Amino acid sequence: MMKYSSTLIFNQAKKCGLVKLQLRHNSYFGMKGGNLENVNQDIEKIAQVVDQCQNIVVMAGAGLSTASGIPDFRSPNTGIYANLKKYNLPYPEAIFEIEYFRQNPRPFNTWAKEFFPGVNYLPNKGHYFLKVLEDKGKLSKYYTQNIDGLERLTGLEDSKIVEAHGTFSSAACIKCDAKYDMDELKENILLDGDPTCKGCGGWVKPNIVFFGEALPPRFFDEAELDCEFCDQLICIGTSLEVYPFAGIVDAPKHSTPRLLINYDLVGSFGARPNDAALIGDIVMNIDKICEKLEWTDDLIEAQIENELNLKID
Image (cartoon, rainbow, N blue to C red; front, side, top):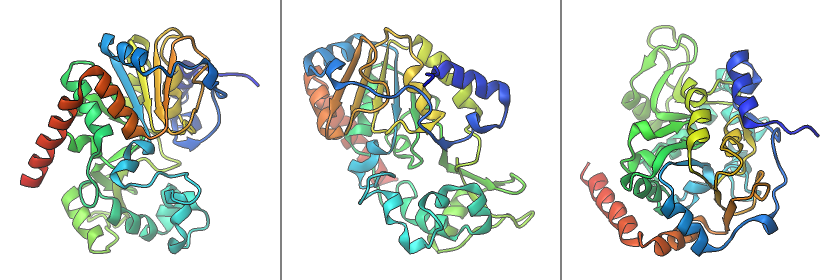
């Protein structure tokens, strides 16, 4: 089977416009088949690399937020897709498909009522690890599949965040693209409403990327260059099954160190000479890294200080 580089994926998406390569979709397209035997799992050596690097790109998926109580999407019994029977969907993914939303926004809006950022869930140590990286001048950019907005609640700078699958921080009409006040949308959804555009009457939704919609231009404008010039890539809590986002993992130079912090080995980890992995509980492994780096106090301080600010707000 032919293997395609992430550079090809990014370039083709730019050339072709709003075609499938530029749309959010499930796929196994790309490099797969990592080998744990070829991956460094020595926490001492892993911490040394993080300590030495000054230009780190982090990419993350739903696994980063599970410690906050937010279920991931694909776990067989506990994932979001496994617990959607009450919505009477034709198939689980329909809740995040734009064409289905056009016909029936109620399932998504019911789901959104629970998952609005800051309503029922708060950042965990994994999110504050990103903040510590930023505070130490090591974080080049953070790319996330997540739409929960928890990294924003840590105080991470907007310029450092690329929300590849969109955000709950703004909203618009799906028919005429008119902007819609986010506070009004939130209030409406929390009251079990289905918001409509005041101009054309079309359905309104947060600016998250549904299956069948294009990823934000910023993703394609910045991902390739950020990865080309990073001195480490850290991949946290993702199955690497949704493209084009998953292409980021193979975008750094072949010799650039890559670190996977995840429940399972995924993607092409083990196929490159400087690959490392911490497999198992994500928060526990982040605790281990911070302990080796003597960042434990920094992590705790970032969390306590920010949570006090969140309570004040």
